[in-house]
Length: 90
Image (cartoon, rainbow, N blue to C red; front, side):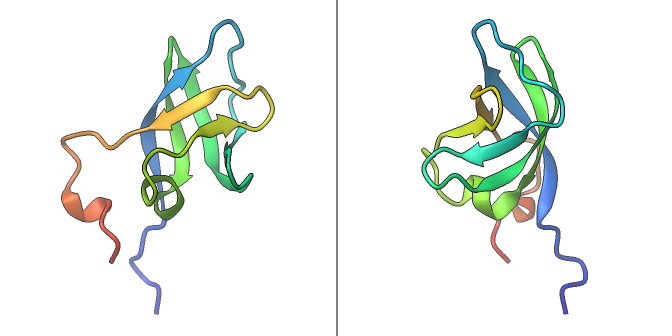
């Protein structure tokens, strides 16, 4: 029934930290609901990669996502070269 449906993807993100660098493997949570939306996999010089649930991250624009432990703001984005069907609800 669910064969072929990809719910999570590795996406690029902007990591907005002043002096606190988040650790690899930190959970990313929605600031409003407190629910986990994914995991930060890598971070260097303000950019990173996050493994996230697509439906939770891109369904409501304007939400604030932070790392659970260090509280650093993380902004995942869809690269322009991604196919449209990767982000559409199907």
